[in-house]
Image (cartoon, rainbow, N blue to C red):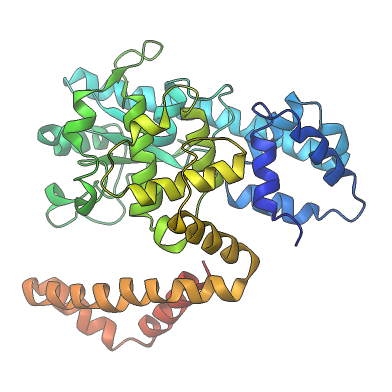
Amino acid sequence: MSILPIYFIGQCLSLDEHPSFRETIIVQFSDPGYDWNSFIWTCSNHLVLPVVYLKLKKHKLLSYLPEVLAQHLKEIHSLNRTRNGQILEQMMEINATLNKSGISPIYLKGTGNLIDGVYEDIGERIVGDIDLLIPEAEYLKAVELVKVIGYVNHWGEPRNPEKLKHYPTLFKENVPVDIEIHRIPVQDEYLKFINQEMILSQKTAVASFPGCFVPSDDHKILHSFVHSQLCNTGYRLGVVSLRDIYDLYCFSKRARLITALAGFPVQRKVNAYFAIAEKLLGITISGKQSLTTDAYIWKHDMNLASPLFYKINRFPWVISELVIKGYPRRIKEAFRYEDEQKLLVQNLGSRKWYIHHLQLYKKMITG
């Protein structure tokens, strides 16, 4: 069986670590029958087109790409670099507003990594939104402060916002991304693994961005793993994001991955994640192999090789999330709140609601 595109792209991402991968890449790119559409689709789907471009450029491999494609990748990187610069300007406006009221946010995930110099190039990382963690006592105050500078919530005021993981996404015209103001870093069920108190106790000031804080390197690693593999069911479904794996690779240059997740309660899941990172990037993290890691990698590869397996694999999760958890939760809410009761009755009598749910099932199963 030919190498799956995701593993080939992993070689592109780890060229700095393994310059010898250059010869394999040249062979692939020189093949007249090489599937460029699959390469681009996979890079785009995993949000790594800009960093793949940079790696190919650094290792003098762009000449092996079709000229039109090389120019396209260059433009994507340039646009993303400009966009990230605008995101940082947007972040500094938010930060200044909060700092004036004595609030010091901690920036999570992509934006936090950008300001903390995790990447060699500001255009490497595609950022979806700005995630900021606020001390719980100041969480709702922070929401009101950013509303004053033009951010709005299109979803309506939530019930019991003080219990949410983060306030509903806030939007503003003429800025590149939306923002999520977090009360806690992950869902309640995962707070035993990483929580606000842990992050606050080791938060790190960013010298080049006064008034901005980020999690410690160990907590970046821990949060990335919990968010990717537990919150987003990556481990359960055997799914990884190359963007997350590349983040892990960048973190490994600053901290020992093994140390950051040493003694983690679900160590077999950690080992499985490390194993797929090792296979994708050709690096050694733990060297531990077990039936659990083998099964995880097998499931991951089968998801990619067989669309039918992917759908069958996702189906029990869809049933669990929508039927077993979702619908009973809505019924419970209807008994507690009159507006939820009216909405439920309205939905049950709406043909569009049933069509929407059938489409939702289809989307969740096919991914």
